[in-house]
Image (cartoon, rainbow, N blue to C red; front, side, top):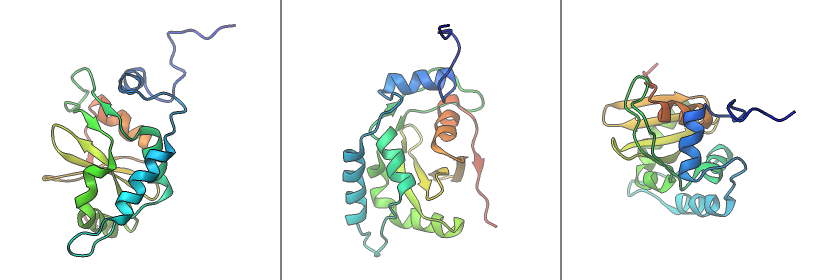
Length: 165
């Protein structure tokens, strides 16, 4: 019995899977050498005010699987227009203070993940694997893990605003 090629057996919804594969992702993608290069670059960086980046397994794993991809969604989006994503944590190199502030507010460590090219939102991941976007309008919660966050971003699902408290 062969699987039906028209049913999705992937971990992502079909349009999300397609956008990821077009960007160069495939199941089992794992570039730990590049992830370690990014980890070292972030660890070695100190902001002028002395802020340092947090580097932890959830971030390194996300970089190893998705780092370096430029994901261009097709379609209009369900609630908001999806924007191109560039998953490179060095977009957040000079945001150590901002990420440290968010981490303090959430009582966890936060590390950069990439950027939304059109809006210049910084994508970030915390030590539990939850994903956020930070931009001039505020801080946004994208999902409990990288899979759901990428699905939301690529599908154009409106994120939830983080509120203090």
